[in-house]
Length: 214
Image (cartoon, rainbow, N blue to C red):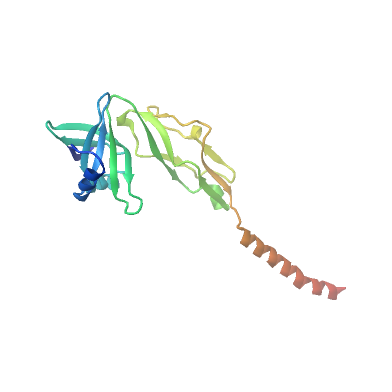
């Protein structure tokens, strides 16, 4: 199980003022939640965290190297990441402890592969669910779960119960929840009106010819 290291420092101050000062220094306030322990307030390097997420994705094991009175190493996953909506800058991060011998519950992205037969025949692929809630040991955590949709005809769908995962991964979402489907392509109202007008015009042109035959 690969983990990426990230340096962190114990944060002694809390509140909006200290948080703003931390961010000006290129850091972001963070919290580490250990099992059966009090939360540890931290500060981590914003650029370093952004690089990890960009290269590894959201579900990445991070080994926090915590500097304080005593140096600690804690294996973690990002539980929550607050992002400023306009600037997209990281504002706060929550890390929670991972133990290699304890199962974790987490949402894993779904990757749809293949071009459905129904789409080739004029249908539209609709993704109803983009991730799957699973439970497994950290060593079995996949980056994503692949779903082959190439065999879907128009009107066909896949549910959670249709997705196959390894035996050491338990799916926690209800089995009857829809994941993906191929629907009939919707025709917009303006286009439908244009087609109707075109048909009416064609009939109008044909009428005089028919009367001449009479």
